[in-house]
Image 1 (cartoon, rainbow, N blue to C red):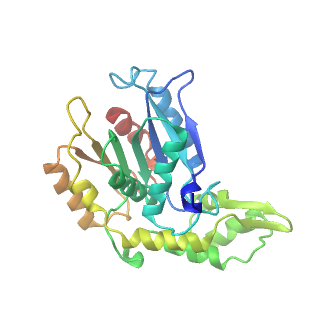
Image 2 (spheres, helix red, strand yellow):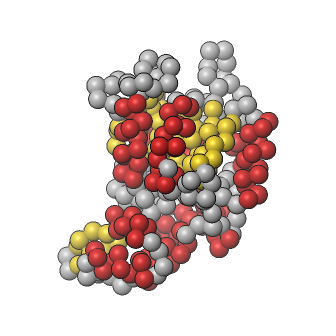
Length: 294
């Protein structure tokens, strides 16, 4: 077995109290994040299945797998190559290692595009997919509406060790980012020896972002697999977009809408009040969409 075959990303399982899930959903965070970013939201989804969820939810409840994607959170030192395809293969190995019936995937931003790569590798067996404010298009990083390239450049420029966590927050805000973004990024700052250091391999993240912007994955949505046979539930994909998000280009929004009009397995939902951070800007709206779809 080579090193790549051995790498399995860190994860945590979330279920309702005393629940025995019949099917499981992978939950994928955005770039610079970790699975813990979605813990509160996903716990609410899990518990809703036992307290007035959608019909049938209690009979076949979902469990959720919070994943730290490669080079994020506790999933450090993954082997090359650092691509969306490699991240998707990590998820396949994770499913095999856990031995759970993985029937769904939900991903935000960078994680949404990893979810598409995963769906591309699993033409069968997935019942639900949620693509949360992620653009399937290939596009230049500088024209993407994403803050990620600027964040990466900033993190490279911050001298380490950092005197304190507050000094890190001040440096991020001085570069023009919000306090909220600064506190989110600070989740990757850890005390180490003579100060604080950023627990991220920025070269690996640069490779991941480069591949993220280079890949076009529209075919995953435009050419879905046919149902595997009688009695097998067809794949349903739900795209949720922030009405105020700059991460989805007008051309991609139009393409989503046109596709949803002709593809019975695809639904597009827009949360008018939300920007890119759907679960922060409009957690109730996002919750309602996903709960109904489950």
